[in-house]
Image (cartoon, rainbow, N blue to C red):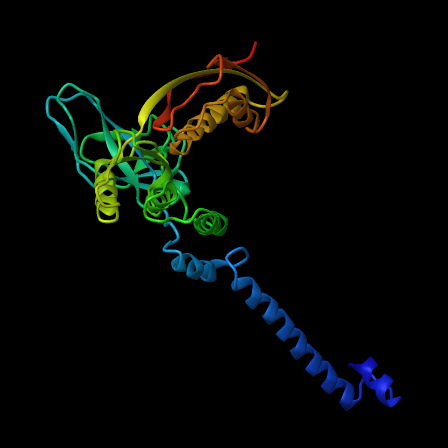
Length: 340
């Protein structure tokens, strides 16, 4: 602006004069308007919108951002052998060293003469932080009478954070690329994925003959529960095509036994590396694998992605495993040993 003034009038204002200060103020406001206009332009399109404005684009397509889901698993409670039963009430709270809290969802009883009982548990706060490793839970907020300790023999799974912008954006754009028309595969896929718990879906038209549609869904932890299946069945029953028989099904479990040998980098803890690989492989076998082949190359990438892994050998599966659309690869036995 100062340059333009000098070109038009031949006058060059001094840097500290009143006119120069006024022009600096005006220039700052004009620049702010340019920045605001660029921001508004980004929020106007789903390809670049962010946060709440992306949510508004999603609403226009009949979508909402998925909320966080709690991790779930089993806690083993231990007590001294006794002639009387030891009751662990529903709602008993257990903790990790990082103060991540879990609550029992059912009552359990350590029977007379027994020393342990396994009880299903949910994380108190939804989110991926609840996906703790095996034996991470070590304490009880208030120990039931006679119960001395608790721990989780297996890792907790199924916890997920709220859907991020990029994942939501992909679902929004998918509704433009594959327009749901109430009858195509995209309609059923997008409807199932609108549920917070659903992480993967396979649609099988005419699976039971003409006029039938089977919808196979998986959660992050794997198999959906009966309550979720009932909700999905009711949802699609009210939206299905006329004279179409829709069924929402759990996937068929395809057990995959995995045996791995790993070598830790020199100077690192071999046992810690083996444990990290075991946890990574267990997390990889989630509901996201629905209908996807189990490829040794992908499994190797998971293993080598663990910190301080120098080398590895996959003993089993010996070859890639073909997976049908209605099958969910489920981890069977898992062995992680030191590489000779």
